[in-house]
Length: 244
Image 1 (spheres, rainbow, N blue to C red):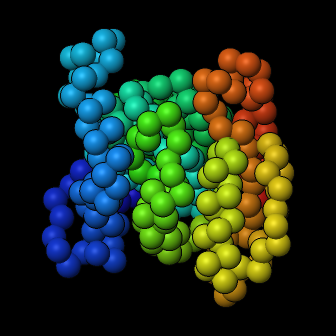
Image 2 (cartoon, rainbow, N blue to C red; image 1 turned 60 degrees about the vertical axis):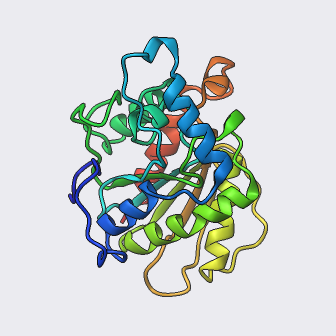
């Protein structure tokens, strides 16, 4: 695995088509003024419970195994989760739910994700998002997601062995569908619903073969019972069964 969990390495300018070059471009992006202002304000002011933390306060790059066959796509970093820790789904309750499911399905080395140096590694899985900066109200605008889309597209290209996509939530699902169409997949209008599976026909011999939809493991969904741990476990068990 390359820089197993993508803790920020040293980069050189000629690595734009490599994982390190892409990670560097993501981390240094300042394309969306609203998001830059918000993420840095949150990092300065902090939440009282994390006042001793040195917040990440930058765009959050993807995390996991660059040889992954499973791609997990979320919405955006949480203000006091990933925006604090610098790793997707790390440091908040959403991550607790997600990594527990990934661990049970054999993709994660442990069921907890607290900070970038907690020893967590992913095997055969890569986690990313349709937006890389913490947005106010957890709602990136269409233009902000459009600015991030090239990052997601390049991750998909670098994940040459990718087979299964799990989209967490309606916005991530819609973003995945849009990018699949842009990449040449003949995709009709698909309906989001937890546990839905859609077979894909890649435009070439290699490419993603399945798109799975799941509710986002947000606190709102888990505390109301809309999403249970068992429901998310079922999605990743299905994803595991589809890998060939």
